Amino acid sequence: MALMLLLGAMSSTHAQIGGAHGHRQRDQQQTPQKSQVPTPPPAVPEVWPRLEDGALICKSRDDLVRYQTQNANNGSAATAGPASDCHTLRKRTGIQILEHDGPSRTQIVTTDESKETGWTNSYLPSTPPPSVAKNPDKGK
Image (tube, rainbow, N blue to C red; front, side):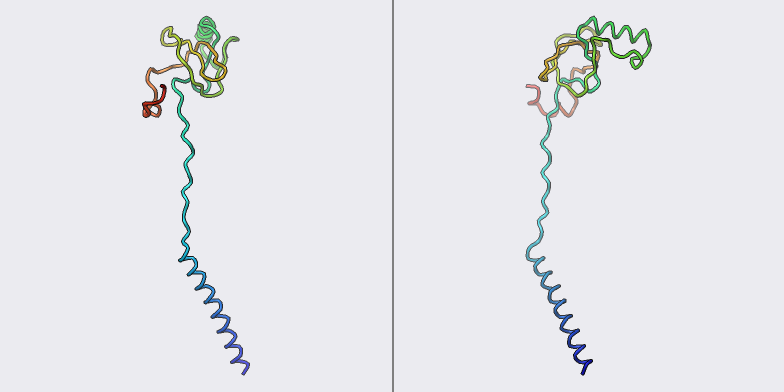
């Protein structure tokens, strides 16, 4: 008799577990989870023309020439450091080119809020990189 009660209790418990498990499967099948694709971050337009982080800006052409001469005489820009009227940029900065004095001297004005005018020895290619050139509306 005790054995019959034990078997009956076990089959009842098994039926409840199995029934509950089966019920959960039916619920999952009825409401499939929708995988949401995260929205990509907005594209940040590339500035062109621009100076990169670390580019040198001097207040005048003479300051830039003095810096270049000092570095040529010392042999290394790292040991000489920038002249007193020159500084390096800490971030990529949009510019407008005002004048060229050979390939190593360009007068620029920054397009950020400071509107700083100065001279740089940074290489400024005449054509934008492919990432900027892809969009024909940029730079207008």
